[in-house]
Each structure stands twice: as structure tokens, then as C-alpha cells.
Amino acid sequence: MSANRSPLVWLGLVALGATLLLVAVLIAIVLFATGPEVVRAPDERQRRRVEVLDARPLTVTRQWRGFGTADAMRSADVPARVSATVTELPETTRAGRAVTRGQMLVRLDASDFERQVEIVTQRLAELDADLAQIDIDRRQRADQLEIERQELQLARKELERVGDIRTRSAASQSDLDHARRDVLVAERAAVATQSQLDGLEPRRRGLAARRAAEQSSLDLARLDRDRCVVRSPLDGVLERVDVEVGENLDRGERVARVVDLARIEIGLRLAASARPYVDVGGDVAIAPAHGNGRDWTGKVARVAPADDSGTRTTTVYVELDQPAGAPGGLVPGMFVEGIVTGRSQTERWVVPRRAVQNGRLLLVDEGRITSRAVTVDFHLERAIDEFGLDDRQWAVLVESLAEGQQVIVSPSRSMRDGQYVEPVGGVARAAKKPRMNTDER
Image (tube, rainbow, N blue to C red; front, side, top):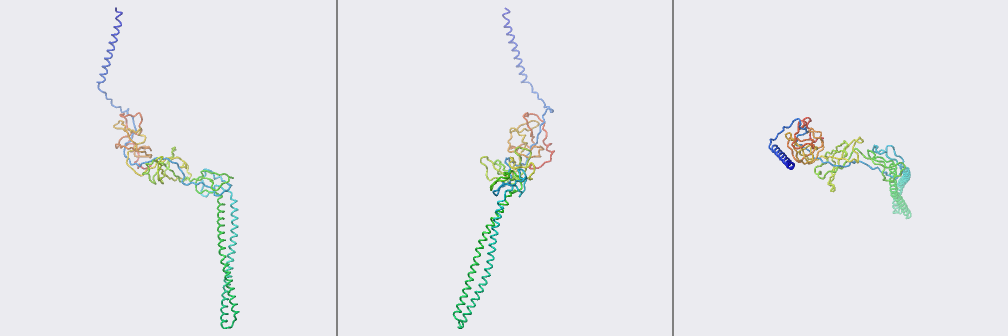
């Protein structure tokens, strides 16, 4: 009988134990929920130190970033001006060598042009001889004409004298006719000589025209002969040399290309919205797009009159001067980025670019972190000494901040709202550096 009851006894004991355990858990829950909250004072030694800056508005000038390719403002493709064979290529005519204006690059065979100069010179000598003979003939005809005119004058006086004698019946009709015949002969001789003299002038003009044409041919032959020495048209550096000794060149064929590295132009493509704010003469900071640490400063020389509807960009042309041949200079073909500074200045709130993470800014308020959503209007790339930081990249905010509000400079994922921190920097750090104009670079 006792053996049959043992399972029931054990089942009762298990039920009793479970009931007691459930009651104990319920009592613990009630005690925990109704017990007083323990407020733990923050341990100053456990606060995280964070770098902050004190927010303040600054007068800033808007900047636009663009990209473009550098190009030499002065360059020349040096052509062959005559058809001839290359006879000399100096050692100085090599790609990468510096050249000066007028320096010989290539010498061509000039023998044909020298022969042409000799032929034309001989023809000119013949024409000069003909012109000299005409001058002699003209002087002779002029002297002869003067004599014949004097003879005509004498013949006319003789005719008058015979006529007077004839009126007094002292001379015969035959004498009168003979005197008239002498006048006609003298007039005929004078007219013939005058005709010969007048005919010399057209002949002289024809010879003079032929001589002028031959002189032009001589000048052209000499010019072609001189063009056999191909010279650099400007100071610069040889970018390429396209010929070799023995090569036959045609007129207009390129011999070499020379570029002047002293003056560089860059066509920067900016957002079309920058057009109203960009002025000719504005400062532009230029740096290689691959970022090798080099930078240059140029000026906006001109602005394209139309925007590119496909890319929605406008092109500004930047010019800069640099020492020719200096190492590390800006060279044609280099892809660069440029930061163009606009003309208008406004007072805006500026924070380090690294302080904005995922569109939020972490602030320190009474020793605790608070986050705030912000919108970046545009970025600046330059030094701002008012904050005492070495940063060169800054974010200009659309929203306003409170004067003196502490902004965490380098936020991290481990920082959370409500976390106690110890701010470091701010006013104390900024006071260590002298205040400078924010527009200084």
C-alpha cells in the first residue's frame, strides 16, 4: 500500500517546491521594482578627455573646387618652311633640352636655293645693264633734241630774214622756198628725236618692272636659303623632335615642338552655380589632383561666356607665372584641382570638416555629449588661426550655433549622447596663437 502512494507523494513535493520558487521570484521582482534608485556620482577620473573648440561666427569667402588640365600659354609647332633634306641635327636638339629664341634646331640642304640665288642675281645684273643703257640713250637723245631745236630756231629766223628780203624784191622765190624747206627739215628732225626720247620711258618702266620682279625672286630665293636653318621661335623647352638626319621634309612638315613653361594656363571646370560669384583677377589655389604636396597660386584671367549644358559646369581660365626650368614646376598636361575664391564675404559658422560625421555634430553641454543634426553648405580649404587648430579643411554650416558652444573636433563611434567627458582645448588653446585675418593663407 505504501509502495503505491510513493509516486503521489513525490509529485506533491515537486509541486510544493515549484510553488515556493515562483513565490520567491515574484517577491524579488516586487522588491526590485519598488526599491529606491541608487544615483551614482560620476567618477571624475573616469571621464574621457575630448578635444573641443569654442564655436564662433567668422567672416568667410566662398570657395569652389574644380579640375582641369594645365597647358602652356606659349607654344609652337616649328615647321619646315621649304622642301629639303635634313643635313644636320645638333646635339642640343633633343626632347627636354632648353632652347632660346633664334637657336638653330635643324639644318636643311640649301644647295638648290643657293643656285637659285646665283641665277636670279645674274638676271638682275643684265637688267641693270639695260637700264643703264637706257639712261645713256636718254641723255644722248635729250642733248640731240636740244641741238635740233636750236637748229630749228635758226631755220625759222632765216625764213623770216628771207621773207623780209623777198618783200623788197631783193630775194627770189627760190630762196624763200629753200628757207622754208630748211625749217621743215629741222622740225622733222626735232619731232623724230622727241619721239625717240619719249619711247625710252616706257621701255625703262618695263625693264624696271622686270627688275622688281626679279628682285622679289631674289629675296624669296634668299629667304628660302635662310629657311634651311630652322630656328626656335621662342624661349622654352623642346617637347619633341620629329626628324632625323637624311630625312626628306616637305614644306609645312613639323620639325619640333617648343613649349614655354614660364606661363601656364588651366581651364578649370566649376559648378555652373559658381558663375555669379567668380571674378576676373580672383585668387586660385592650384595643386596636382594626385596630391604630391606641391601647390601654386594663380589668378582668374577670364571666364567662358557659356556653360556646358551636358556637365552643368562653367570653365574659368587660370593663369600663373613660374620660373622657367625650375624643378617641380607645373607642366603642360598635368591634371590639377583648383580652389577658386569668390568675391562675396559673409559671416558664417565654421567647424573642422572632420567634426561632422554622418551629418551630425557632437557638442559638449555641461560635461555631457549631445548630438545635433547639421547641414554643410560648402567647404573651405585654408588655414583658420582663430581656432588654434592646424586643420586646412573646414565645413561651413547652414545652421547657426550658440556663441562659445563647445564642438568636439574628432568624434568617434564610441561617443554617445549623455556620456560624460572632459573637454580639452577651446579658448585656452586658441589664445596660444595670434589672431589673424581668416582670409590669409
